[in-house]
Length: 102
Image 1 (cartoon, rainbow, N blue to C red):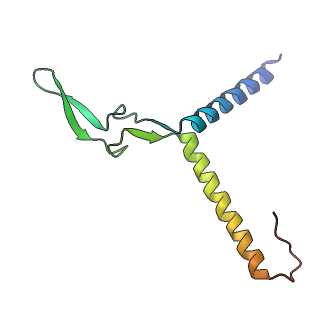
Image 2 (tube, one colour):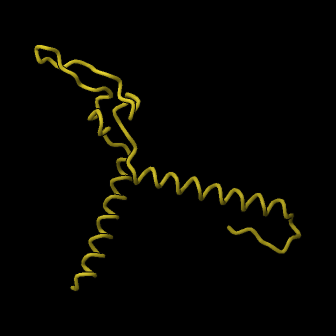
Image 3 (cartoon, helix red, strand yellow):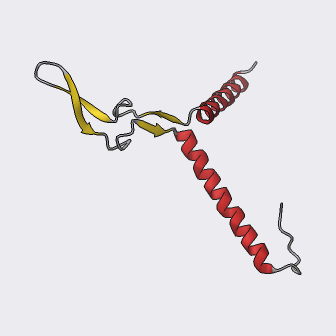
C-alpha cells in the first residue's frame, strides 16, 4: 500500500469515526469548567468551593461538538433552499414548464 493511499484511508476512517461520535453523543463536557458549570476555586485552607458561573457553557456544563454544529448548519441551509424551491414552484403555477423536484 502506498503512502498517499494509506494516508487517505486513515483520514477517511478518522472522519467517519468522528461522525459516528457526533451522531451517538452530540454533547460533550465544557472544556473551560470541565463539566461543572462553574469555575472551581479554593479557600485559604485548601477546600474546594464554587467559583464564578461559566460563561462559555452558560452554567450547563455541556457544549455541542463541532461536527454536530456543522451538521446542524448544513441541514438548516438545505431546508431553506428546499423551501425556496418549493415556494418558487408554487408561485409559477401548475401550467409552467418547470416541474418541481421530488
